[in-house]
Image (cartoon, rainbow, N blue to C red):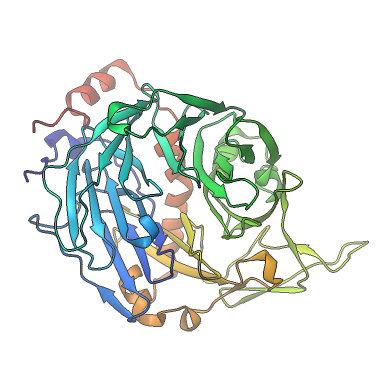
Length: 458
C-alpha cells in the first residue's frame, strides 16, 4: 500500500508541540505511550518491551501521533495523527493489520463496542468509519477504505466516544459543541440522525469521558473544556446535570488576566470503572484533581479523602487544618513537586485494576538535546468504593519498574532542567492546538500554499 508523502510545505508550517499520550489495556496487560511519532509499548504480564510489526517500510508513523486507544475488549489498538495515517493493530501480536490514509490530519479515534468499526475524526470536522468485517487475528486486512459518517463543518473535532451501549457516537469540537449522533446499523451509508446536542461550554471542548452506571445503559457523559469546567450530561437528552469549576477550585483563576485563564484549560479526563471518581488534568496544574461523581444525585464535587498527609513523587505535603477541620481535605488541589515539574498531558486506567496511569511530555521541543520527552507516573487506589488512600507510587513501585520506564520514557531518569522546559511547553500546547489563530493576509496565502490538508491521490 502506498502511503502519503509529507508535503514539502509541512516542514515550513508553524511548529506545534505534540503532547505525550498514554493508553492502558482494559485488562492491564499493556501500557502504550506515544510521544511525537514514536509509539512505545510495554508488556506488563511479561515485564518486557514490545516490538511492533508493520509491513510498511520505515517507522509506523512519520509525524506526531494525536490519538491512541484500545478497543474491542482489548483485542484492537488504534494510532493516528499528523501523517494522515490511521493504523489498526492486533493488540495481542502487535502486528499492524491495516493502514488507512486520511484526507487530512487526524485528531481523534474511537472503536465501536462490538469491535466492528473504527471511527476517526480529521481537522476539517469530518468523522470517518472503517468496517473491520473479516477481522482475523492471524491475517492482515487489505483494501480497506473509510467512508464519511458525519461532519461538524470546518470545526476541529477534539474527542470521540461511543456510548457504553454502543447506540450513540459522541463528538466534541473546538466551537464549544458536543454532538450525540445515533450510530446506524450501516454506518458506511452515513449517520444522519442527531439525537441531541450538549450545549453549555463557553470555550473549546477538549475531552470526553463516560461514567458507568447499572441504571443507565448508555452511561453518563463528562466533558472538559477551555472554560476551566468539567460538566456532567445526560447523553440521551443532552441535559446539563452539573458543572464543577475546576479551575477556580484548583486556584488557577485567581488572576483576572485573560492570558492566565487560558492556562487553566481541562486537558484530559479519566473515570473509574465504577463511575464514582473522575480524574482531571488541567493545563498548568502540577498533579491532578479528583472529582466525586454521584450519579444518583446527578452531581459532581471535589473529592475529599481522610488524609492528613499526601506523598507525591517522594515529596511530603503537609495539609493545613483550618477552623472547623473535620479530618477531610481535597486531594491534589494544589501540589508542589520538588525536583521537577509534572503537569499530566494524558490519563488512563484499566477496568480491572486500581491504577491511574499519567504521562507528561511533549515532542518537537527545540533548543534541547532531547526533542521528545515523556515522564510516567502512577497513582494506586484509584477507586472511591474501596475507601483506599490514593497514593502516588515511587519509580521502583510502579508495575514494570525500571524496565517499563526505560521503554516508555526512553530513559529511567530525566534532568530537572529539561523537565522544567517541557512543563512550560505543555502549558502552551493546548492553546496552540485549539484556540483559533488569526493570521495577516500574506501569511494566510502562504499557509494555503503549504497546507497539509490536500486530498491524497489514491
